[in-house]
Picture (tube, rainbow, N blue to C red):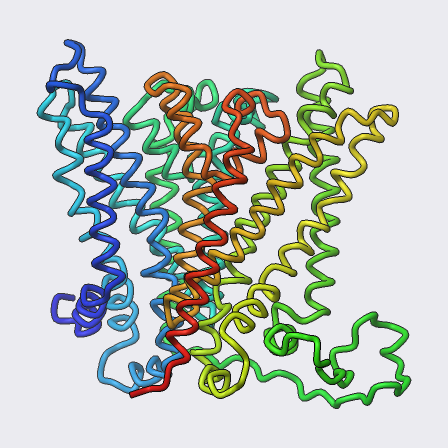
Length: 567
């Protein structure tokens, strides 16, 4: 294995990139900032070692969050990048066996993640200076970190072995990691009122096993046993005890599938069906069956229209009308089904609460969270390739020769990115609009609905601007999409981890962290009891507006630089 040339190539190519240096520096900066923030003044702590254990737990959680965020950036594109460069077939023409190729890609992709984790080991060992930390706790936390790198990295490699394009593999991997790391852990958190402790034994067991898949819950139960955020179902073992075999099983299955996929070169993607263009005004059977006919010849671009805006909607598959209408319909159906499911669940589990109060408090909160989560999950997939997709396809050289101004190019790209997000928002609006009519046509929910809508719209603008910002900085769609996902997930979900330190920090400090979170602002606007006391909606809207304008201006400057003639 040491002599495997693929391992050497993967590690050396990863270590030589700017992304690797930036990730290592960011990892060390976050670790150092957490140590400075939590370290007791004068190095004096309590006799029982509670402060040292608190610092150790925060450092372990911070490092595992970093691994969760950046693991897909190095593993999800490990095989798809070879397909895009048309070098994967060349590997199978060498004297190496398929097993050596698969092991080399797996070890080479995960090796850099191990190096990143090892750079944070000295910071993780700092609480030993305060006393109260046992060696077994340190080894358990380090073992969970390394297992998480393998566990999540193998999921990314599995997606990379199945997909043909890097940006699609990264999008799918982030969506799966969002569910594995965060969504399955929600029933065990106070945000869901500890749903894991409600219902029958079978229901509790299922939720406990699902929560054990989350590396966050495993680390919480290992470093802070008995904490409010790591309480499992009664009678079941701790989350980390179940996480070890479950993560190991998922890793082995993923590795087996990767080995099977790499035993022979993957088949090329199926070519698209050749469509016969239908002239405008010509009546066909499809005219009566489909609202949008993709074969119909498009109208000429009017003088008042932005050519870049029209070009995006006619060339990018994700922005074509028939796919947008399908996505709109699915969002409407899912939002209505979730509202019905939430209403039935709340009525069944909280029978002592009046039905009107359930509608006024629980349903707006769920719908607000759903709206923001849809934008955070789908938004980067639509906006990540706003500018760099043209550079990858070789179209950017043609755009540079046009007479369009840089501002008009960026405006057209931004409009093409924001309209699909606004359609997703409109798909969820029906569930918000019908809420007041559940309460005998009372209108007291309309201010709440308008407040939630303001946060959701600002989130859509921010995600579109963030995708265009990173797309202007990087030349590859996969890299820009990965950084956009890392930013929106960090701001939207990871800031909620500040709730772990409610006893440590003041309400002002926690509110300052929640200001940058769209999810926290949406919950505050919906009247969530856990968020309304922080009052973060108004400052959040102001901060996100400034950040959106700043990223838009940076994108304009970058387009001006990219349009300069080559020397």
